[in-house]
Length: 191
Image (cartoon, rainbow, N blue to C red; front, side, top):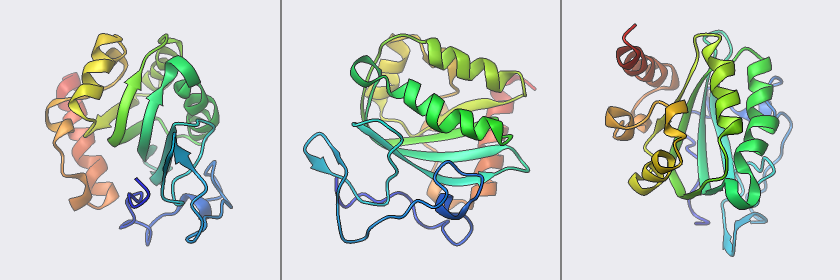
């Protein structure tokens, strides 16, 4: 896992470490020292820690004018043991919501597993974005992870599956990706 980097091809347009409105503003990453791990597997130092010991993320792009953020994840999403969604919601999402972000694209091809607990924070997040015509879209999560979301009945809070699960998102610039996802979301919502 140590050689899986967060997507880097948009860094000429955005870095969360240089964004004064980002929860990771001023964060410094080593290119030499691997200090973070998912269990006993070291991960690339460019991933950001938001408080979970098994799930890490990278805010790849945020557009405050359009109100969207693209966030990539790596690791195990474990609400049962670590309440990852609570830490994500409190430490990252609430900060972005306060900055006017209400549309979230979550990239999950490197999320290996999901373990459920309750749906309180998912429900809260969904209500907060829905009030502002927002949404939460999941891109390219592994089929077994999507099935786990469905079994836990939290898939109701996300837009997922279909073209969202096969979108070749790396071939787009971030604003074009947002437009693609937004069009799919509007089509599904019938608006």
